[in-house]
Length: 248
Image (tube, rainbow, N blue to C red):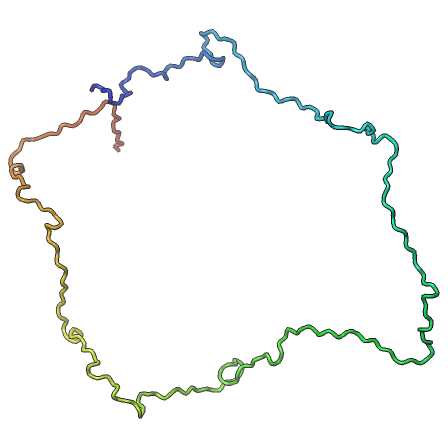
């Protein structure tokens, strides 16, 4: 089969070796260089080294006092003047005019009793316990207390209206109030049929073929016929054959 311009190229038809089949040594550099070729000198560029650490000393912009040496400050002594302190206060003894002897009664003379009025007594704290009137005792009537004996108790209901002397018997249901039971309950059950909806016509949804759609002359199944064969396609020689694992 001749390949056209638009047909894909089958690489299996190429009989020559590809570029990957040749392993010639390189002529660039010095690693695995071709020994049959002249090798020119090769140079290597090293990496850039970091700068050496330099002593970080203060520059000329920093002013250092000339009186400061390695052993300390060199110069005349310097003193600091603090604030004035307060005067010390001495114990002041009262003088003779401070005492009033005329206000002191003699000790051996009788005198009326003297009392001191104290402050008002504070109220005591609120007692959180409830008062006696806060308790609600259970009733002794009925079964309310589990540890107490309970006597039987009775409940009296209201009077029933049914059978009362004033009962209106005219309110009883009449014959028309009772429903007639179905015959199928107490007799043999009759057959029951269900009526479905009418089916739509077939031609409304499905197109049936008409008389002109059939070709009887093309039907040859009832006549003798010569054997017929089908021509398959031509397989390419580059198609991978199917390998089936057949068990012995």
